[in-house]
Image (cartoon, rainbow, N blue to C red):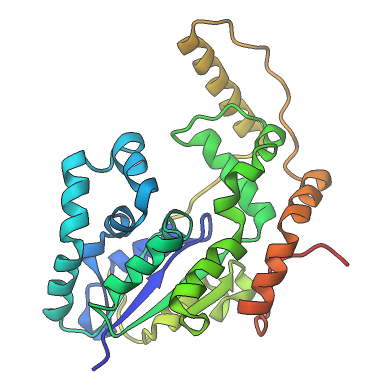
Amino acid sequence: MTRRLYLHIGSGKAGSTTIQRYIHSMVDPALGVLPLRSFGTPNALRLVAACAGPRARPFFVDSRKIMTSEEFINNAYSLWVRATDEVENAPVQNFVSSSEFLIHKVRGRDIRIMRDHMMGVFDEVKIIVYLREQKSFLRSLWAQSVKGPTKSHLTFGEFIDTIEGRRAHWDYQTSLSAWMEVFGRDTIEACVFDRRAFTGGDLLTDFKARLGVPYEVSDGTYQAKENVTPDDDELDRMRYENHIDLARRLGVEPPPQTPGDTLDSAAYDARVLDVVSTGNAWVNVNFLSHASVKLPVRDA
């Protein structure tokens, strides 16, 4: 029997939380696929921490404080031993794991090292990635930066000025070419994060089809969670409150509130498209040539 891992690698703002909540609910061996819990569930952060090279420790220990220094070191040494034991004692041959951090934190040589470890546990690895078109992705990322723990005070226009520094998140060509070089083109299944591209018009239906999960088998207790983004006025209010909080911590007077930038600005959309078109065209040719929905590119 072939021991197979389905590895969902993101990207950001492309339904990863929904997919991970579903994976975490997969408890019935009759599905034929089970989560690889030694990698971490619902998000495979233990796998990322062990494989992300120099980017891992500052993120997991210093910034996010997900692990202590001791836990971080122990995880790097024990992860593959635990994964091997879990696979060898499981009632199924197929496993699934997911982390949106894999695509932009595990890079270059670290991908190859990860693959070498994986092939000591599995006979086959299949990679699944959903790609959100960058115009809406960057809008969503900006909203998350305002309402999330970073408490950003940047307007959308100011945020877009930082686009080059966020290349690891939106440059799908660079990310996928690195994974393709190590795992091979035929190992990777890419899909645009768009209902028109999903099997049955639904993300989880599409994901289950890629896992080969039969629809007639119970999916357990999974409940989808809606992630609602605040409207423009609410985001602008939150952004200014973040600015006031920053000024208070710095001991300076807060600046006067300035109006935010409209998220529907054609100028910003055109600017993003100018930056991403070349890479998107490469992804369309190499991974989406037969797909019904492709990533947007600038008109010739």
